[in-house]
Length: 200
Ligand SMILES: Cc1cc2nc3c(=O)[nH]c(=O)nc-3n(C[C@H](O)[C@H](O)[C@H](O)COP(=O)(O)O)c2cc1C
Image (cartoon, rainbow, N blue to C red; front, top):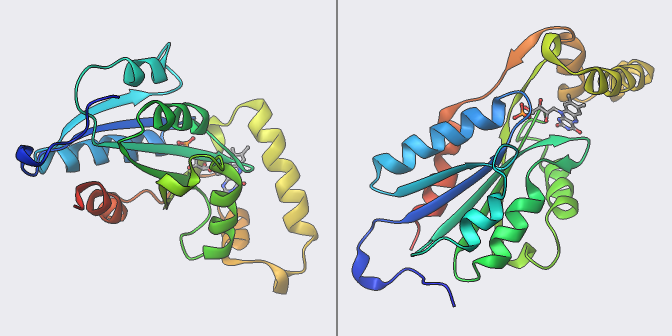
């Protein structure tokens, strides 16, 4: 059994943040979250799931207490970056609190879309342990890879085929900011995640 938090450690926590980001939105949230948690006295280990050779091994084998694992991943058509590494880390640390935030174009007001995304993306065996959040990212059209550009073009064709009255606000914004760099990231949006990480 891996060590867990003991009552005599006061309010300090040991937190691992595991993030996966293609164009930097999720990375920005991971950096802000690190700063915000460190400011409360937490010890934070920040792990880039795409860059680390063995992100899960870093946690599974790590000595010492780990109170909270926070996963952050960008959503690419329902495929959430870093979810596999997060799930393995949660399985490897059965005593840690598990939080996951999806980062996407979708506005947090799209609650049903987000509920379905979380339901589909979070593996069933860890879902009961995971508190899920959603953060708004952005889009960086000029920097998109050819593969991502092609996928986005298919989305544009679909959105253009929708009657205007059937388009959601997110749909309208997708078309409005087409070809541009649009960033909705906001450090204040992390407040509920910080609160959940620090909750008793
Ligand atoms: C190919 C592609 C597919 C995407 N699919 C979705 C999607 O299904 N829903 C959504 O809300 N956002 C979607 N997005 C937007 C990303 O989730 C958004 O850009 C996010 O901020 C990416 O975070 P990152 O830069 O950290 O990877 C998509 C973006 C791209 C390029």
